[in-house]
Length: 210
Image (cartoon, rainbow, N blue to C red; front, side, top):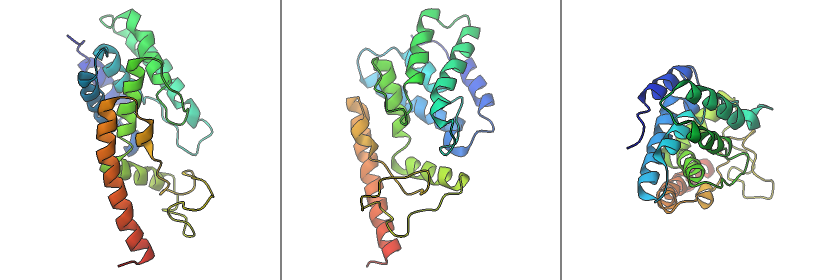
């Protein structure tokens, strides 16, 4: 039976009280639920590790345009280790596995975790970056960083200019191909289909097509 993580969950909620909407406690809860769903369908995952990592994965989040953005996962992992060490009921031997999963979960670092728990955390977090919620979070981040909605000369990045999501909000990466587990791949396909439908409608509105 998995360890009761409610006390840790309450602590995380307090820590993230003033975090931006795209990385707030609601994001953590969605990632937690995604991780739980994936873990229960994939054999061999340790729920104590997966769920603790999901709760603690975004304790530190720097803006995408910040020079420190690539340090977010490492600093979150360090803080997660400190927090878990405060709870005597959490197994010491599992703390480093939680820390590893958090340290390797970030999309921007382009790492592939060697553990199943790390792969599940990556999948769970990336699922929250696609679908309807992914679109909502994308525009939330773009607005908070005062980015233009899209490149007026190339709204859908169809030239060879390369994606630049630090300048334009509508620079959506095809994340589904980076999923690890079968469960996440199935969910990602449905969410990606929704994004494609959204982009088709947006294309019609931007380019004034019937």
